[in-house]
Length: 177
Image 1 (cartoon, rainbow, N blue to C red):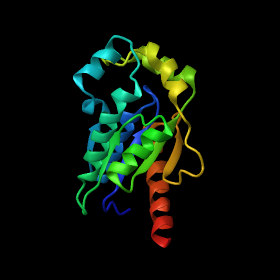
Image 2: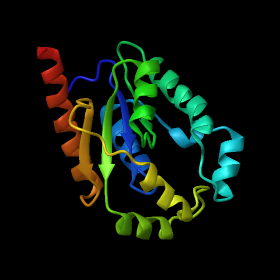
Image 3: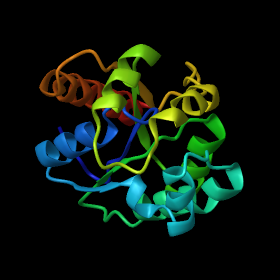
Image 4: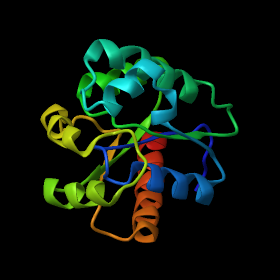
């Protein structure tokens, strides 16, 4: 698979495995990876740590930083970001800043993700915010042709293999157009 300027967002609600998947993909592809959580302002982190959901006003500058990070990818090297990108408007904001982006949507049901969050230790995102994440989530629609949906029930290695195959197919389709 060629990775020329691959700008990739691994997206989904908190606890779906974005960071794990993004790290695994970046390692397999030899790309730089950043966790979108690291691009939040201290004020946003404090809000989430205290159990308060972020507003769009909190998110816009963060999404701009995510897009800027991706836009800085050189022509020979791509980048991977773990970022919730829950609403279509958020994905559009990132696209507007970064250009050509491919999203991998890690899809799972509430009960499974709630169990995962209950086992997670040391993260500032409070499990009680999962409800707001699912309420905010706008499942990508078929017209968002740059989004690939993957079920989180598969083991990470299988998800990486499926993602790589889907990305290769996606790149081939767009190269033909």
